[in-house]
Image (cartoon, rainbow, N blue to C red; front, top):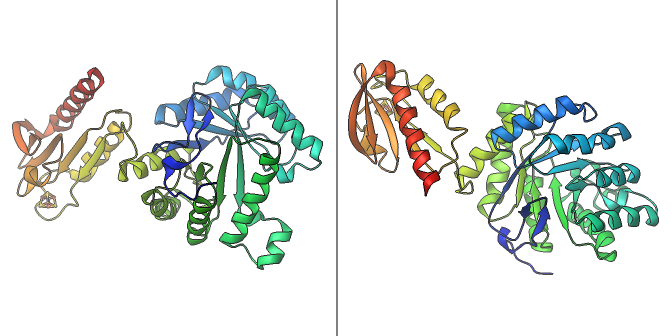
Length: 360
Ligand code: SF4
């Protein structure tokens, strides 16, 4: 096994039509909040997630009703579906039979060898991967006894234990997560994992908190890892609407140039020179560009003092100027627009640029 730390040096693993690992892309995931057996509600939630930019979605699979709902859910959605199973191999078999694109199960928790083999053989037959989810909060007793408390080494040892079970059955389509709610523990565990094996890593800080605190914790931890080239897929865990998880993940990936087709907003921090209602404009534009799938940089500035020149790298932008707005491109003012229609004009220009990118 190699000891490479960059994400593209990981093993490529297919999840539906996507490849996780083996490249420099980072796939965005989320998990539904609905009861999985409620197909209508689950599909509706997944549709919202797809629209927000979610690339892979996971559903909890706590009982047979949930596992049996998988074929119907698959019919209603367009992105790969992952079934989250804890112990019960029968649920795993049902989910695989139902056409799920990946399962999350720890083989060491399944029990007897025949049961593990049954799951692995079914996954092999369908060509679907297994994600091993190591969690600092639920390490094996044996490992906890050895280290005394959850440590990064203990988490890696746990991952290797589950990996070995799969490798012994000649199964290698493996993705691994090393989650912890303690940011520094999670970072250390992922770093050690990246140095120890080359299976792709699914990043996440678990139980990270609400939209506000969870966003900061996740960005702090995952930022360190992404910047080092670690991580092939991310899930931001938030006690919030899962659509918010996608928005945070997209923004985080954008910060590291890892979201290929996403628009970015640059907005000024505001000061006493402000000439327009910048905060609400910035929020409106930010919301608008969520669905723009083109690498456009948009700038929104409170005034023109240092205005357009300050945002030379922006493809398009506006700056406030006493009751009106200056529309500028690449740092040069192209025309003046009335304050009342400033945002609409900017949106039109964004759409034009996005259309040009699509044509290319
Ligand atoms: Fe202040 Fe103008 Fe700079 Fe915004 S662009 S921070 S309002 S000087």
